[in-house]
Image (cartoon, rainbow, N blue to C red):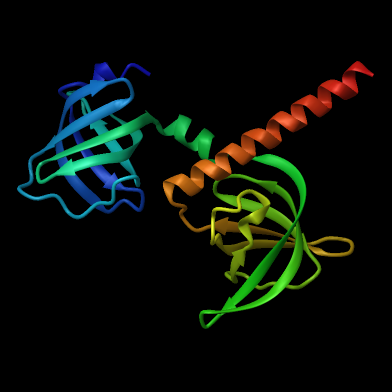
Length: 209
């Protein structure tokens, strides 16, 4: 995507939950980075590293939505990096890898952990995982996933059970992850790409036999 096409355009920045950040103008663009000059006297507090939506308007009333990660901000200026289209962002976020991994979860009640409960992860993305479990879980159940299956450095991985389906000898559930810190997301992303590479090599080996 040629970000230079958006230089000088009016834009609106929002948090990923659509909370407004600022109205402004795209001042500079270069190599996946975008600098936005705001019209407000003071920006609301934002965290560097978090994602933000960039709604860019043209003179006909049309608009385009981009996603970028906040790199730095000043009272009337905000810099974003890793700016991509909404379609590309969604493709990256929902990139899913099929696996068959043993793992453990803990149910959370009143800030207390109960478990561990053994599970098998069947597929995983940056947003969620599909897993099988012999124990019955309820909708909106809060859980902590032992993250050691992808990193020994990540201490916590929290999620909410969003869907469940009865299988022959167990239940299959989808759990949506809480937002990860940037470095944690990078660890999980590296794990996903490694697993995808393993699967590609396995399929190639099968075809060559």
